Image 1 (cartoon, rainbow, N blue to C red):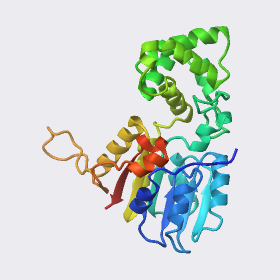
Image 2 (image 1 turned 180 degrees about the vertical axis):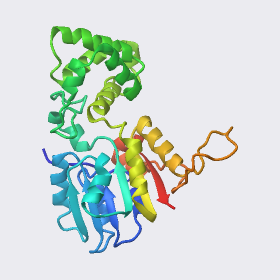
Image 3 (image 1 turned 120 degrees about the horizontal axis):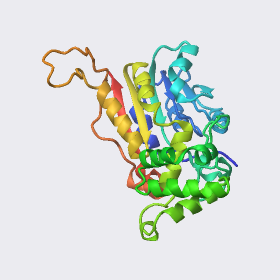
Image 4 (image 1 turned 120 degrees about the vertical axis):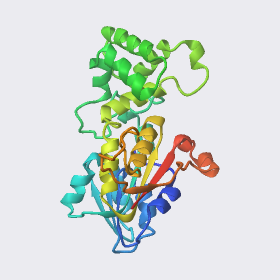
Amino acid sequence: MEFHHVSVLREETIHAVLGDPAGIYVDCTLGGGGHSRALADLLVKDGLIIGLDQDEDAIRAATERMQDAPCRFTAVQRNFRYLGEVLDDLNIPTVDGIMFDLGVSSYQLDNPERGFSYQHDGPLDMRMDRHGKKSAYDVINAYDEADLYRIIKDYGEERWAKRIASFIVKARREKPFERTEELVRVIKQAIPAGARKDGPHPAKRTFQAVRIEVNDELKILQDTFEIAANRLKPGGHIGIITFHSLEDRIAKQTLRKLATGCICPPHIPVCTCHHEAILKVKGKGIGPSKEELELNPRARSAKLRVGTRI
């Protein structure tokens, strides 16, 4: 299957991150290279874009897309949690801009063999790094009921998490889950019929939760955002696109912390934390335009948050 992904909030992100046209930029979620290619068209030949992605299909597709880019380009197959190590390996202390496009690419969703979709049958996989040890199969078939409940509740914000976890455990006693359609069927059985009439697909939140667990998505965000901010040159920009409230809450709180001076409790009369602000942050997140939503309904939950290094 050809790697295809529609870049969300592309123009808004590029213009928020762009500074020196001969500068160094990092695309921490390279995907199909949509954001990187748009940024490259605004850079000069001495400019450099470093693209990170743990998905080998994404690296291959983006590298091909960037072949005739007017600037330099380097692709690195690594999770963005290793941003600092990647820059150290390249002997690059600071950069002019960093962007994150969190979530799942259209290619990953639409390719049944990747197992991300609740609308197409495929193997229970959901690994962004296809060499990763833990897959959705392991989570669904090996986690105990309490852990399944916690994951679905915390990462999926699913009100029926307890019933879904119970139904999964009961069903797998008969036969291990192998396919996404098997999981979807049990989730639908767990959610009362009346609760399935309105709102998103009944399996959406559970699939989100399992995907986050498989790829350890949320635990690494705060530390990575802080690393990214600290590797920016003065005046450099960070842009973060999120797709659900859990990601956005972490992005918002982390950027706010990095833009705050003293973080001591209010009752302490003299500052002892010595925390200094390193960013200026725009107040509200930027959402997609009406025109973009008409072209790409998947962008409806996207939000861009931007910070500038002091």
